[in-house]
Length: 66
Image 1 (cartoon, helix red, strand yellow):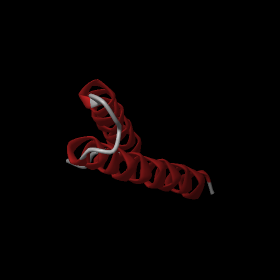
Image 2 (cartoon, one colour; image 1 turned 45 degrees about the horizontal axis):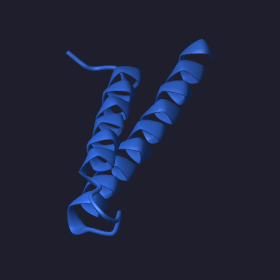
Image 3 (cartoon, rainbow, N blue to C red; image 1 turned 180 degrees about the vertical axis):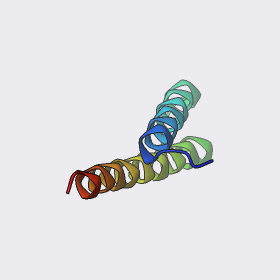
């Protein structure tokens, strides 16, 4: 059974939001500590994958319409 790109995009978006929330909560005195930057990096990767999967979903939907 295949999962749809739209479902995976929403899953990755949720993970990106979660990582961003945890990064905001982990800020102590300054944002420039290793753990916060690592969480922001993972959130950025998750959002990038979500955007690519959303584009794939739209491309597949357009190809099925033809």
